[in-house]
Amino acid sequence: MQENVKIAENEIVIYPRKDKLRTRRIIIVAGCIGAVASFYTSHPSMSQSIGMAIIFGLIFIPIGFEIYRTFHPKPLCVINREGLLDRITVFGVGWIKWNEIKELKIFQSVKINFIGVTLNEHQAFSTKLNLFKKLYLKLNVKLGYPPVSFYPAPLGLTVDELLKLIEEFRKP
Image (cartoon, rainbow, N blue to C red; front, side):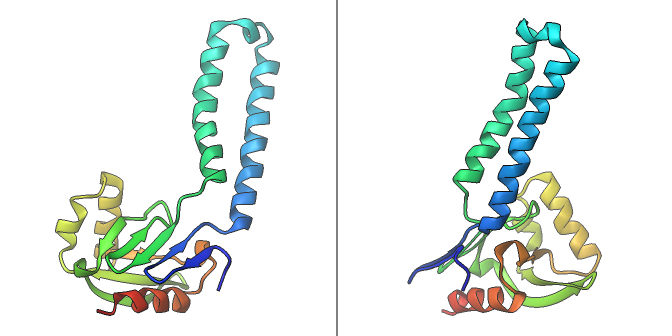
């Protein structure tokens, strides 16, 4: 199993892969250097003004948060006896309890394998999601796919490996 997968008796916690975090750090540092250089070279007179401080604050507060998240990553996926947590992609729907899941199956879209989760009541489930994720669930259903899908590549696992881990904890 991958080093980013932490298996305990009660749960499995999967963090982002180290190579993904390293790439993220490089992009953040390059972005910071580029932002400072572009503002300083394009507006040398602004470097002493309050406006420049505000602009740097607006740029570096989100970048600072991103740097913090890079060095203190949240788990992308948690699987335990209560259910599973999906934060694998931007379309991650958060906690899904086992009693909300009707079926798990592997499906293919654009030659990529996913784990599809069919929900008992996807309309009721979608009420706890933001508008963007609600639209994503509706789009999946309109296209004939399960409402929720897991793409395990960011975890460093295959579809079969992730499905096996999920099924282990789904058993009563």
